[in-house]
Amino acid sequence: MTKDLIIRNGLEGIGEGEVSLHLAHILCFSGHCDIRYNGKDFQIREHDCCIIRATQLIESIESSADFEAKVIYASPIFIEKSTPNTNYGMKGSLSLSQNPVMHLTDDEFNRCKEDFDVVEQRMEETDHRFYDEMMYSVMRTLILDFFDFHVRINDMEESSTSQGAHLMGRFISMLERGEYRTCREVSHYASELCVTPKYLSEVSNHITGHSAGWWINRFTILDISRQLRDRSQNISDIAETFNFTSPSYFSRYVQRYLGESPTEYRG
Image: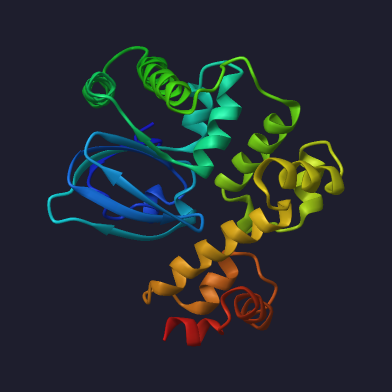
């Protein structure tokens, strides 16, 4: 549980180390922060809440000198166990992947801050006989409030979801867990989801405007680019992390999607 739920102040280290595959729930207290996420630019301002489902898709972060925020990192398995059984979950999650920032009213901000405080306080009660269940419960309350904010902001109905959105949500969840590091074939994901590769790509194109293969490569190349920028990592080790059969195959992949060889990209 200690590694499944982590609380930090500020955005330093987001998407790195022990929280590299965690979902990030950000509450901004002051200042602003510009984030490039999944190819789009967003700004987090005072009293905003931001949910980054896939920190691997963060390309850049620039914060003002007075930026203050608290971040609750939660592992995919913890989120899976904490997410309420509601039809809104998948639809809301997909919408957040396209626009992760929510501009809260003063009342919503105060409610969200209370939720953050409760999660942080209850995390300290490790002698609680039902600690895991308690933490799932307090996190579930926070998630339900996120859903409530999101419905108001996006004018979405809780009951409206589709089979396609549910399928897409499951597909994105597999990528968020890092499965692209070991397998990048659409057929693998389609098989796990009990659909054909063609159907998965059709649904992906319809809902997000991008094919299933695009999403797989998007997660992969942004993760690779981040690791290449970390000069403490050997290029051959990075290739092995992503299950490439040879350094030359890894180099061709990077050249294709980043326009430079791994060595050139690293500079």
